[in-house]
Length: 330
Image (cartoon, rainbow, N blue to C red; front, side):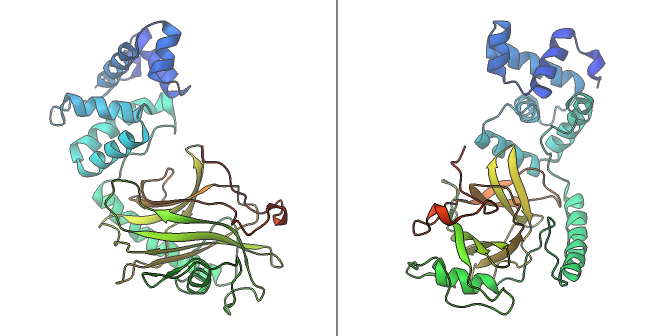
């Protein structure tokens, strides 16, 4: 396996345009007045040159991984490649070796390579300890950028059951008001206002029956915001993975909220409450993903997605500068 110094000038320049400047095969082809397939072939040759021999995964898989590492796949193809890497030890090993060779040029811009099973076990053991420590600290009512999930069933059961029609796996008629009629001793005494809300749905073709509701609520006097999620017909996360929660606009604008403290119940119910700071940036989507690492930097496989928007009955003029607003999905 050779390093970047072994590449010829054209190969090195192609990788720099792809990795440092984020260009696509099509854009480079237009710049150099050649075909996208020629640029792709040159990039693949460069990747092969800096990667180890891997006859067990085959030429097509190496090409697929090369496109993945170079950021040249559509979202669906990227998800399929990531799934392959999750299941293929040989594919992961080759991808890691290539990524190591590319890192001096790409820095931290390379896509994530799924962890080895042993690493996942170690990560989740560390996560359990970290969550326990966070819970101990945040019992003192600390609210900051380090976000912590409250116990499931406290605020979700009170607000989403009343406002957003999810209850024990059965649909209730949707409420016509945007405030709740009951409060809990774990919440501020004022009634919250629903700022944004949306319906969580599984991606088309996933075969999942899971669905739910999500909302961001605001206690104005306390200047407190919370993200609420209630899902029904949810399957437990596969072994070696966990569900993660994200606020999302685009690959460049995303915020990992964390892992739900509560697990999926025997009835397939998942309930989540997360405190948000007033300075939380504006996002237009809520994602429930499947994660295999402790600190994901990009959303994993999307299990549920919701576009969140201001409820029709809430006049936009009532929002404030610190209130998250809905945006058009990029």
